[in-house]
Image 1 (cartoon, rainbow, N blue to C red):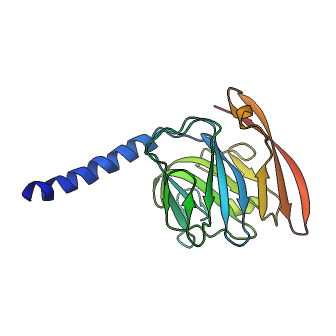
Image 2 (image 1 turned 45 degrees about the vertical axis):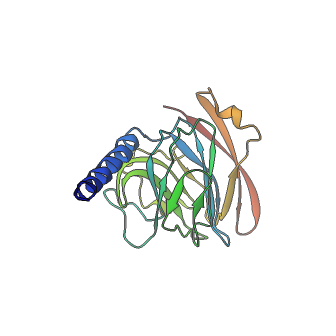
Image 3 (image 1 turned 180 degrees about the vertical axis):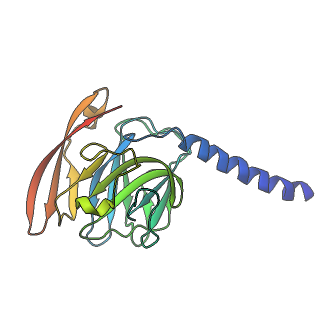
Length: 208
């Protein structure tokens, strides 16, 4: 019984170290946002552009970034990627993020309530509101980020901004294999905003 009491904290420390160590291998552009829907049960998805290590811990927040910290007035969702490496071109879906969040791969806890206008989502590693490495961001208005200062994200590549009023977008790619082994890619997004209109938006993205 004494051994169990002593081993429990050790196991927790090793578990946290393993996730933290894998998360440190992540950098900007390792995945991008591939869809976003702020209607009803919010959802979004990401496309993996570099193999994502197993047991990686990633946070998503819609809080504004001020150049040094996030605000405390918005939500933070935590995603643990699971026990296997996630290969390039895998699309990960996050469903019902404002009510009962779940992921198509790995597990999530907490909720992410996506606003229907002037919204931004950041993805990063680190701790709940303390980012270590920013990975990607998306916004429906350029001011929704707060700022991209000190994030190492670049608007138009690792931070994708849609017109004001956009509440839905999706990456238009019928064959996910087109994401493999290509250094320079043109991504075409379809977005819907108010008043209702469909916009074809081409994003040029360079893998670093």
